[in-house]
Image (cartoon, rainbow, N blue to C red; front, side):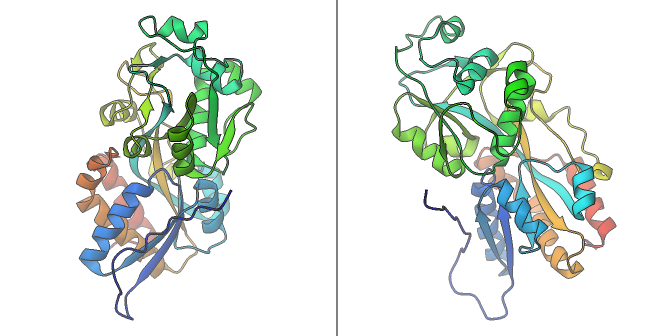
Length: 330
């Protein structure tokens, strides 16, 4: 498949002295980073060149020190950040949705159903497992076509981490990661590629970040959570899932938000993270931090308009203190 590269080269020509920051990684936050970058350039004249290549690519590029910052929806563990001399902090919270192409409203998917579909053991839409959770719907006798990511992806990491918590069989047979050995389905590059397949293929089902589902007007399912409630994806249900998060600067803010407790919590919630090289020149990291500090001060309304959940102010304060400890923020 032709490589898809989304670059934030926003605005017209800039003066020769203008600064450009380079970043690469997750497609999950791309719609928001594009809006933040555009507004930041208008305010400061500083351009953000962000390549939306997937979390795996973003991690590789920051590890190779070829970009000013990397972006990943799969947080690195404290052991990993220490080994690679990276710093890590979250920017916003969002959700991964299960989207489908059928003329159905109010589809509910149990953990058993999602697990079976992506394992390839449930192959038709009128399977009894799906009918059990949807007694009022007329489910068609139609083949299910699974669509998944083909690239190393933080969205895949969030989705498969959820499956590993919700479904013991999935954990045993497949597990979780930025890339896994999918038992069934067809692969697509990026959230954009999955969304495009889902729009075209009748009877298809896949997972994408919530903003992509909204922008592409995809139908999304209500998903069974840890309490047995069926919860639709929304900023409110993402926020409910994040309510129990403990953001710890000493752990480089490592936090997983899937399968959280609470009857209103959406079970496939995740944060997205920025990675900085601690051994980069301090002034380079200071420039990146100024951009995200600006976004924390001025970008919440843009985040909300695109269906992301801004970080609470106390978490932003922890992140600013983390930056200060590195000498990246006055």
